[in-house]
View (cartoon, rainbow over the protein chains, first blue to last red):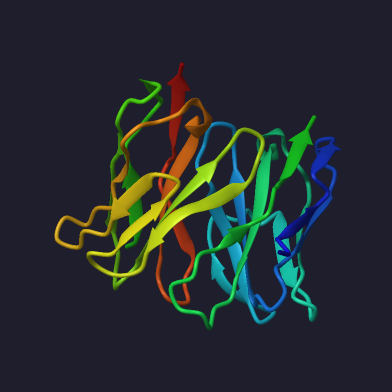
Amino acid sequence: AAGVIQSPRHLIKEKRETATLKCYPIPRHDTVYWYQQGPGQDPQFLISFYEKMQSDKGSIPDRFSAQQFSDYHSELNMSSLELGDSALYFCASSPRAVMNTEAFFGQGTRLTVV
Amino acid sequence: GNSVTQMEGPVTLSEEAFLTINCTYTATGYPSLFWYVQYPGEGLQLLLKATKADDKGSNKGFEATYRKETTSFHLEKGSVQVSDSAVYFCALSLPGNQFYFGTGTSLTVIP
């Protein structure tokens, strides 16, 4: 079965650089979530999109922005990277119209800022 | 607000021991409750879920019962294996809303 695809799997950037993370949800899933997981930490909700519109906003820094495109894939853009941005970034998708469904997670993108 | 409080780890058990990981929640409304598992270097995988009070979710020998009266969703397994070593996250979701995760509990099972 198709799963949530994230790219790249690993990314190394220098401080003050920019990074773009991509997420391809499961077909027919209209909701995408982004989470940040620091070393040894629980996933922290960043932002979500439903039908290409921002749905909820969590602890996403102003330096980050995200959007969902017409094909439902989503991109997380990160600028002026800081050492503290080093983390595992997860994307998840779900079909909002299906009640009580779980979110399906991708394998994550490991970002290292040096 | 909505939140999940999870038993802190790390937890170390011998193989075949009984496992309980406590999870309690606060929610405005009627949430669905989930346990996710994260194996080293991998993403979060759904372990089990329950969508209404008194539902019992079960998978791979793990069980959790949705207790509305105590706002709890404790994870249990009667006999753990080395392959169960992972980080376990309790989570809730509300219709049309984001997921809320607990802090995660690291489990190590030793032979």
